[in-house]
Length: 367
Image: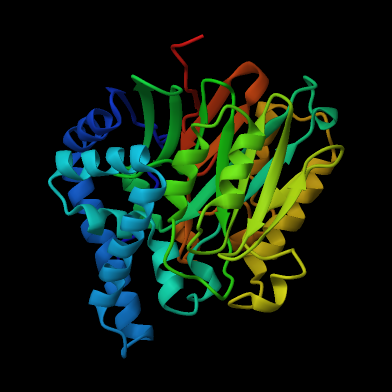
């Protein structure tokens, strides 16, 4: 597939405001980005088909699609409201609902079927900072979102103003539910991918995050992570004005950490002793380098939004750096960056790597 080429002009982050019921918000999303969603689904299906043909010749591609459909059914029972929005998106875009769910949650569906692919195909870097390490004495949290370089063309910030429930902002791909974002209560959420054996049919990670972002506190968001019938391994984080916490989860269990006096940095390999032996692949150089680099940066303290933008732009480790470019030819690139300050209800985001995107604050309407 062709790699995106940066022409020197900062990437502008597109935004979409939707309102009404969950179904109405989804339908408005689907109608507004119909052409892009159709292309996104086709691109993701092509990528999945190519991967399976090369590495899993004995597995029928239809199994991948059927598994996605099964996971959608589980999500519909677990979170009817969130799934209603997904159905509305598919309806508005004129695409098959199960296929859209499958490609949106592709890493989870894939990991249920097979041992994960080589570690150069994905990776995010997240941070959680307690008040003691920030200039303003307030919690800061955020992450890069790194995945397929071709996904850059489909990045979208969605502003949801529902009839019921909290107003939210989330940044991800067209046609998708929440990936990273914040709600009107100042609760922010996000994730990085890890790979642990033992995946199963269950809740896809975007469905889980879409439920988390409707929580009133970080602890409520955390309980959602703990109790969900998860399909695969991830790390999840949640922050509010009072603190920040992170979960390293497999499909079966979880380990919880809190950013109290020390920062938490995370990339894409397991740290919990019970998960390390079950990791689907050795820790790769990128994940280790990014974790070490972000840890060094965070430990210096006195951070603010500007210093964290610079952290996300770090290129000290070449192709293993926090900022990941398509031309690195590593199979992944930074598609967006998000920084949140929950106490002030501030969410800042850009499309692409930090130094290539035009950063903007995403504003809430409600008090």
